[in-house]
Image (cartoon, rainbow, N blue to C red; front, side, top):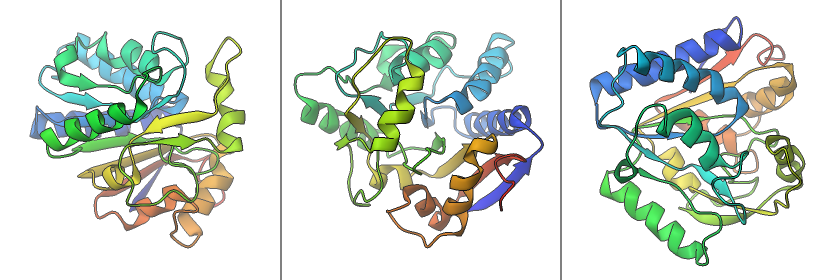
Length: 240
């Protein structure tokens, strides 16, 4: 894994958006996966702006869900689908036949996992995945200790995830489980891009970059990926 330190979050967003743009030039029908976090919003806003200006082609790419909160409808603001739909799918006119997203309210969550795996296998896996840095270093909802061989699965959420997760919602919600792509497919992506910005991420960034590589710190596993890039701003990189 390479580490690139930028001045601020805007520069992180610009660098990330350019990487995604280059990927779509190289392979217009790329399968993309993007985290639904506050850090990613600046990047997605840039991509949407470029799309409106015809500076990027999103007309052939495909998008797969990273994760979703179990028990919450996708039209609820704060859910992963609502975020990606508002920031990518609708602004860039991505048709439903070109994406798959977990339904956290599905009666059969195991079938959702099977469908996600089939979607990934149909298109030979993820070409580029954009990840954030959770405060407990989870990847998607692969919480500390998750088996690296897992594919899509339902996860019991770590207390840190439950505590931090409520910030995404304007209303009171109960979040105890998530449904997520597994570490197997995340780490099998052709390219992994990890973003972290802000001083509040500096401690976990140092842990990810300096601890022993282990599924106890899931994001540390990215260090062994042959084509991974961590993009930081100076505040997030302050303790390195």
